[in-house]
Amino acid sequence: MIRNAWEYLRAQFSADVAMDLGTANTLLYIRGQGILVNEPSVVALDANTGAVQAVGLEAKRMFGRTHAKLRTIRPMKDGVIADFEVTNQMISYFIKKVLTRYRFLRPRMVVGVPTCITQVEKRAVIDSALMAGAREVYLVDEPMAAAIGVGIPVHKAEGNMVIDIGGGTTDVAVVSLSAIAYGESIRVAGDEMDEAIVRYMRLNHHLNIGIFEAERVKMAVGNAFPQVEPLTTDVKGLNVKNGVPTAIRVDDSEIREAMKEPVGNIITATLRALEKTPPELSADIHSNGVYLTGGGALIRGLDKIIEEKTTLKVYIPSEPLTSIVRGVGAILDNFQEMKKVCIN
Image (cartoon, rainbow, N blue to C red):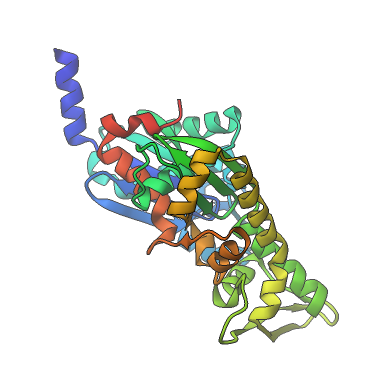
């Protein structure tokens, strides 16, 4: 009786947290309040003491611009934790930022993770969240969360395909009956596209640019399918021949060529998933189409080239960047019923 009363009070006065712990961005959804954090997964540390100096957008502005006494870190790599201690500090910072009213009660957390991470990597996510202050942690596959976030009825005996392209990983999954019937995760996504642009600029224009300049170029003119109206942007960096900072103008066709390999890998993973999907689910996917989510869904023409290669209709939700965290938030809002979609 006492335990039931305590559970009731804890449910009433604690704020449960849904988190999309991404390579590029971390998003937090608070039950009853919505998405309160959407910031880059970047931390700035004092090089001598290891003390946190900045987190999120402020730290991203410092990336590549720091002096010897300050270093900036992206603690997530390819969708998993690369630096455990710094990830703990980052999660703790974001939780304290949004849960100032509930510090005396530890929150329940549900965290989205890539489909094919290892048990060790899952354990690292759980331990990191517990050390950051969670009382209990549940994991959910990111494509499952994305499917819920875009409104797919995942509980039905009906196949739906989701392609979630994040910063570090691309997850391709077929969802049916509140589970993933087939799932695959490749460590090719937005970061790989940025690195491809960096390589292209160095090889073809002898221009050395930073990873966030490459990300800006991708967002400005990046595309996977020829555009009706040409796009151009100025790319700023260091000329490797004379060592002088310079800027050159590039168009969308060059950036499309630069990103050709990572885009091709994503299409190959999609075709492989379709090939391995059982016939009945394949028939459903033919009727329902494919849902494209994550930041990669914003690449111009990516839906068109997937449609061309698969002959399936591709749908992009209105807010693909927040699909996962909205899905994880929906699990929190109706936890007892939706708990079954979490990973055992």
